[in-house]
Structures are given as C-alpha cells and as structure tokens.
Image 1: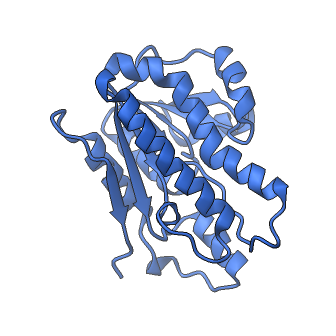
Image 2: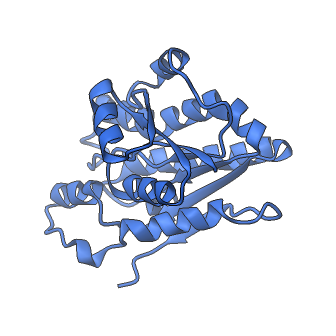
Length: 229
C-alpha cells in the first residue's frame, strides 16, 4: 500500500485523485486549511487522514505540521491546490501578488522541504500539478503565470537536487479543466462557462497516476494535457 499526501483534495483534480487512490487501497493524508475543512474532507473521503496547514500562510506550515502526527514514510506528495486572480499588471495590488505567490509557489516549496525526509526514505515522488500558464503567459494572467513559471523552476531544481536520493519529480501542465477554479476564471473573464468544452478532472488524474505508476527505471519529468474537444 502506497502513502500519499495531497493538497487541494476538496474539489476538481485533487478530489479526482483522492477518489482514485482510495479506490485502489492506498493510504491518503489530505491537507486542509483549518480544522473545519479537515472534518469535511474526512467525511468526504472515509479512511483518509487529514493534516491541517494553511497554504495561504507558508511561514506557519512548519509550526502547524510540527504539532501533528505525520506519516513515517511517503510515496508521493501531490501538489494540486492553487489560487487564481486575473487582472492586468496596472491593476494588480501587492496583496494579490503576495497571496498568489504564497499559495501557488512558496507553500509548495515549504511543504516539500518539510516532507523530504519521508520522501527520501521511500524514494518517493513529488508531483506538481502546474498549468499551461506555467509555460506561457497571456495578458491578464501575470500573477498566476508568474507563480506557475516559478513552480516549474522549483520542480526542475528539485529534480536535479534529489535525483541522487531516488526522489522523482514530475510537472503536469493541464490546459483548461472543468473545475470550480475554471468556473471562477470564466466569471473573471466575463464569459459563459460550459464545462463540457474542457478537460475532465478525471483525465488529469489519469495523467498523474500514469507518472506515479511508471516503473522505477524511468521518470516522467513534464507532461502537457490539452482539451481534446
């Protein structure tokens, strides 16, 4: 039985991954922002355990996790959670920039740092669910794209640093996916939202599982996923 920590399991891609991993008998630890959310996740995913730590406050993650029981070993750390606020550079305040970078870049870096001993012990796998915005930036997407470009850099550096410890690192770059975040993006863009036009979260979950299940003689480094409709 494999052991996984997942962020963003409350909806979308993270929820799809949690269901798939639980369904095959794996052991899950789900990160929640507060105790109330942890209770909701425990009810939604019977058998999963929860950890409380707010990705919006990466400086407090070490303290928070230091006061909780953690898995002794870890086969994968799946970074799925993220935030998005669109706006042109002329409009975006430092509050938006700091919130976006904290949740999308600094928190994943800190959570990875804190769990690396368990990952090294199991020769585990870190998966960053990035975005097409991590490879290119469009007008109105500067803060989000900057955070995701940074996430790619984090993954690339981590892969080189941890190769000798047997830790694999994969970045997945989904295009528009039918999630609550995508619905929010459409509202910000002033567009009608039709989930049938976009990638099903289950398809992205399948992509992540493909990378996780690859035999140890190989490593998937980067995977792009685009809408097929």
